[in-house]
Every structure is written in structure tokens, then in C-alpha cells.
Image (cartoon, rainbow, N blue to C red):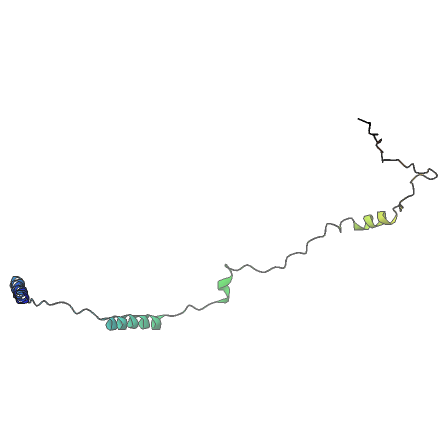
Length: 125
């Protein structure tokens, strides 16, 4: 059985080989390899790097792009406006003490704000 399968596979291979045309030689362009491509890129990069000329920077180049620094003005305190007149009014102000009345000779009337509720006496049932 093994011999029959080997013969069959040989015959199949022979048929397939006959059907395909013989080796065809074709001419193609040489494709640069990775090493050759790296060399080309490196050569181009070095050539451009050598040809680069930096632009000279002048002191006047920044004038349109940078603002001149100015120190901001100190803010005015809102209390400084009438400070002298307010100080005089404070000094001449009458001192009020707790427990004394503004009217001389009149005794303060104490009001009783506490209201006692009447207790209800429980009635017998």
C-alpha cells in the first residue's frame, strides 16, 4: 500500500512538472539594498547639512515680536482719599459707655421681656 502511494505521488509530480513552463530568465533592474539606500540618504543629508547657512540674528529682529517692559503703577488705596477728615471725626467723637444714657439725669427703664406662663393645675378625673 505504501508503494502504491509513492508511485502515485511520483506520477503527480511528473505531471505538474510537465505542465509548468521551463525556467524563464528575466532581466530586472538592480534594486538597491537597505545598505545602499541608507548610504544615499546619508549622503543627501550630509550634503544639505554642509550647504546650510544660518541667518545672522540682529538686535533689531525682536522689536516687532517683543513688548517693552514697563513697571505697573502702584494701585491707589481706597482709604487714602479722605483719611485726614475721617481721623479728625474719630478724634472728636463722643465716647459712649455701656450702661450710661445719652440723656443726663434720666434713669434707664428696664423692660421685662420674660413672660411667665401660668401653670395649669391638673384636675381630677
